[in-house]
Length: 357
Image (cartoon, rainbow, N blue to C red; front, side, top):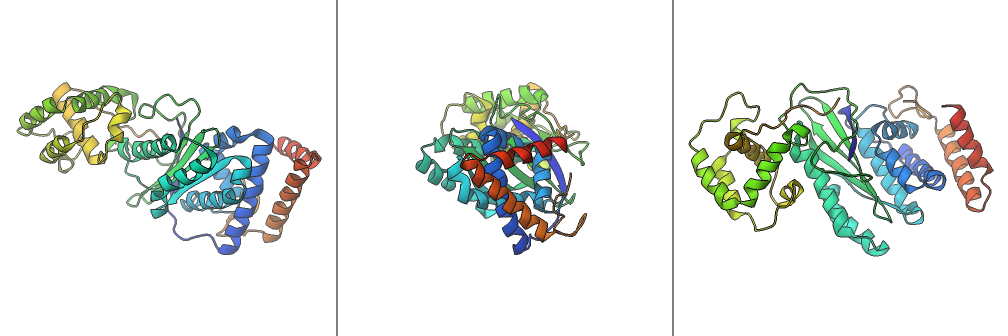
């Protein structure tokens, strides 16, 4: 299920090297403590919570509200897991821009080393990216995609899209636990400062189920679909429809369907697995389902911290390097003692956290 969405103002720039090094070192200790105290599954749950993830970025000293928190924090976590991942049984792949394209290769490399089903993880990676970029057409183009997974196959995904016109980024969180459907109401909760009154298309809404079913049936019987396309090309598109006419090239769709490779389509997820199915194809097919079957899709937007070390840009105050380094060393010593059976310091830290709420 998708566990949440966070909207953040677009900020450019990067973390200074002195801060990023400390973010990586502190991340190592936090990851080890979390797994040692609560287990891998709980760590995935926390990272899939947009509020917890945001708070972790604040703890590490990055901008509390900018889009850069996502990419920088994920970068720090990935670097940290290169050192401790095989020890604690959690791995991280993907990243920003071109790095995200290497996700399948990174999955194969790790899966072969630890004996996981890499094909399943690659399918998950592709599906969640397509859902947030193709089925949920909210104006945010994905540019960052990361997948964290455990040695027993559980996973969470953190990905982010950009809307340059609005000046905002939107972060999407996913968690493998209790997944029921990738394509219908996959999110359990959404937090957002910016909610759009209407978006281009929401094909993951419950009310879009008749449209998903119609599209699946149309693509299962491609011969009949091609005949319908010939007939529909003479019809006028309804002006009230939020889907723009320039997005619906029925001639292009007919050529695409005729060249589509033969495959079984048992569910709507299989439609997403077809190579070449993107936002324009889904918009055209959703309009076609309305014209032929009267099934209308949804256009609703589904979107409805404390500082420990300061922030990169000096808000609410500059990063205190001495305190930051002391935190890293304290956690490292606590972890080393816990590994040899001396858990008193970790217990003290845990009790202090409870007292502070």
